[in-house]
Length: 109
Image (cartoon, rainbow, N blue to C red; front, side, top):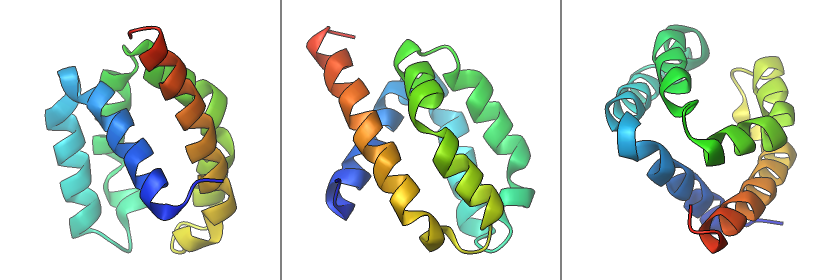
């Protein structure tokens, strides 16, 4: 299982893939989440949608989205004000994303 540092690194690696063409969307979404800590799931939906649209062009991020994120997304939906309730799902996401990112790096993507 991934520890907090490794999980953070996975997110940074995923953001690296997205950053090539989507950095302004990443920054706008992150700024919104920071400003709306209790209501980000509602107030930042448009920023999330913009980022999703932009990152949908990356095959690596598509694979992570398709293969890793469903449980975590459902948990966040069910616990929007308590993301700590989703630690198990986040760990699965991190482990799954790690596998995909390692394969992508090995293949030179």
